[in-house]
Image (cartoon, rainbow, N blue to C red; front, top):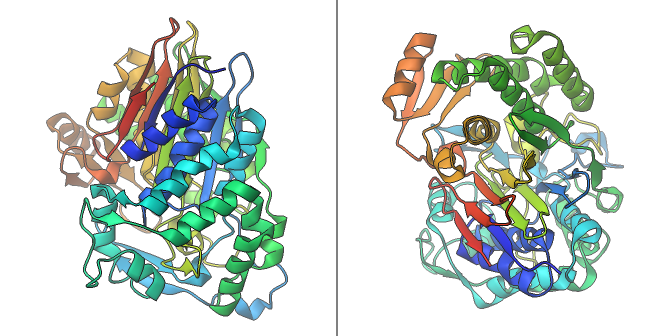
Length: 508
């Protein structure tokens, strides 16, 4: 039986849930699941059970694996005329301004809960219902809204979260005004949904009552998800990418995910260069993300193109390459050395709540950066692109680290900078997370520019690279929210969270 665990999560309630799961007989996997389910409850608008997730697990004494629970393209058996419908366009004042699509037509088949269930079945040691119980309790008894979720809702409550009456009512005060940090939220419909999931398992979302309600709502409101789509969904166990970084062996999300391969290539190039200078950091990001914008963003086979990229980098180095906000991450490591990292996303949210369930649906079909080929053009059953890259690493001495981040296309660049600092030069994890960040933004048809947190050294490197730039305040939420949990070779557990988000950590 696991004695202790270190958890890094989105807030105190999520961390407490993880620690509680271990006290009830769970291990790091149970802790991470419990923490993530509470995050899905207490971060409304930011993440939802109705999105996708990846779970990377490295068992003590075993081999690592990644469980792919990413969202899929729906529409099995539908009239082709249905595709392209049910979408609502919104411009959000987030990250300098973005355009996304919500509505029922933006909803992809959710896979997150199926991945959590499979992770529990393969590696958990406690009862499934005990891992779900804290999320039900938070929804039924109420929780205080955090400032990160409140800031996002303030930007979206009158547009993305304003068109659906149930959603707007749930995410505003009684007078219809925006929620403020510290406001108490109670959602008995969501609590009842968690109770069903605790009793019947994640299967209820796919072939049970919740699944029937999702399919019925999508059919009635112009969405593409059918009962056949939900019944056909399966999480996939994949062999993770392995990347050597100094004395560390890092296991991360493999193709068809985009995030893991991009992270692995960036880290391998930083190790090859032997430099963590800002010029090198910016140049490596520019090379890799330009390749992504030209190849991966328009790929018809993300798995094949992902492995082709890795092979090309092994042959010729990075120079040989052709030139989402609503995410949450949880990391947990226990005293046995089991590491688990979970990243989940519901996109920017569709704005639609399934009637009677309290469950906000994702808008992954409405995110242009995940659908560069066009909205609704993929074949039903195709997994969408993903930036998520939950990772677990082992040091030659026996240290274990679970780490990941939310942050859309900033996930890979945030992890690249943190892991390079921690694994290559031994910077303490908390310092590596808190240090300034830069992100090279590459979108086909737009000028490449560097987003960066105010720092004189970064500014000088950008000038040396000759790139336009956009300066942010220090510790800006835009640059993700890295969370790491670790166990030293001597058995000491610790965790570190990101000041850019309302991160919380706990050891018990």
